[in-house]
Length: 105
Image (cartoon, rainbow, N blue to C red; front, top):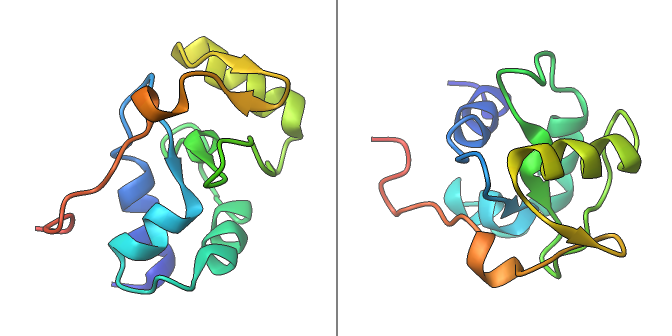
């Protein structure tokens, strides 16, 4: 499986109302230093409806980039039920999704 496909598969498993981080995704694929690469892959997301890349944020809760702009990302997150405040995820610890060790099984 190509790396892009693996990332898209993982992101598609983030539940509505939750977010994860670029770093969490990098750890989930066994490449803990690949956060920037994850961002580049998500920027090329060919199907943002199926692969909800707007649910991926920075490790400090800041929304981070989005191919369609940060305002669109904020609106999509709020539609999902994730509150934001001043460009950050509100209640970040409680809405953060983590992947299990067997994330691809």
